[in-house]
Image (cartoon, rainbow, N blue to C red; front, side):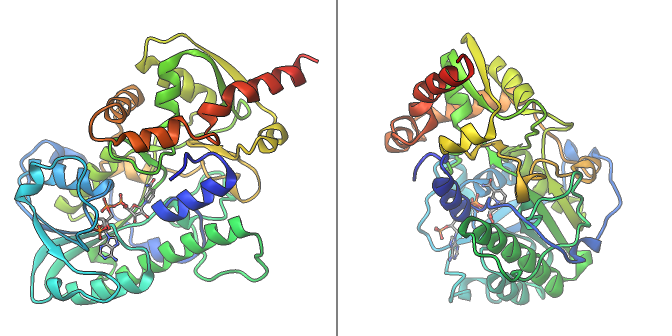
Length: 392
Ligand SMILES: NC(=O)c1ccc[n+]([C@@H]2O[C@H](COP(=O)([O-])OP(=O)(O)OC[C@H]3O[C@@H](n4cnc5c(N)ncnc54)[C@H](OP(=O)(O)O)[C@@H]3O)[C@@H](O)[C@H]2O)c1
């Protein structure tokens, strides 16, 4: 997998890992719930039997770790192909069920759990089939969706009750747009299938924006911890009002478990930071994780960025056209319902420490740090061009 800088790589990574991000219109999120205070956060919760469809790649690892720490029992259902890269000791306490969401749910038959988390839902039919099977013997279904359901991101304050696109509009020919639509439509229909089976009062839909943190395989966000740790002249893309949104994977995972403990049915955006943040503010804050001396070179010409194949350095996404509102997702409902966001500096430090640890294969690091297409590698050349242009 390549570092996700070019438009081509951006598309591929989005599709593989679920961040295409995009959206459309339905009434799915009518399952509002009342805001709850966060008193359950530190109190010992009632022990739950939790089934995770998935659990071994990224988000799932943190759900498993937190759930076990909270005294819950965890079963996971996977094909057995993806092995946990973190928390290997904890996984000894986890029941591992093997099957395939494509055609083999046998391991889930005649079993009961208190709650189900559906992380591996990449097909509305998969969600329909698993929810149909489990609704009799499980109380609650949590579907891991995405802010991608909001594509095209045309609003300036996108809330959970936004009408979602459920069918491919006619006349879409651009490949990038097609992929964005397909992902959002798939997630939106999957949400609907979960609600159809379990009912709105027994379904939790969580829509994360770009997640980052330990075990992230997308190689998207890691650019910043690596780059800011080094110092020197740093290319910062975007104009001064370009907003960014992102979330630490652990904040999502932990909040999901607490939502289940609270039986807090409803639809929630999982988006940070708490308030508005521009890309320039983001780099200023994030660099505090390191002692390196960084000089930020603000490259605020979209044409120039596109000419150099820079359409996004997550969390910054070129905010034009259908992406104009991709970092304008409202998080008030989540925050009012127990979403907690750890400090950015802590997230950046932990992500950097993970990246430089044994948990990451050298081959993965090489892909990001040595790939000739990576901005880390191209940055010097691009900045030279930028200076030639702006100092002429
Ligand atoms: N990354 C982001 O920034 C982001 C943002 C918004 C939303 N999301 C969504 O977050 C969710 C979580 O993704 P994650 O990868 O971190 O979750 P995860 O639960 O950590 O890992 C995905 C799991 O799916 C299993 N799996 C894949 N294909 C399967 C199949 N055919 N049958 C059964 N199990 C299968 C994998 O195990 P095996 O390979 O062993 O089967 C793996 O355990 C996804 O739905 C994604 O769309 C991600």
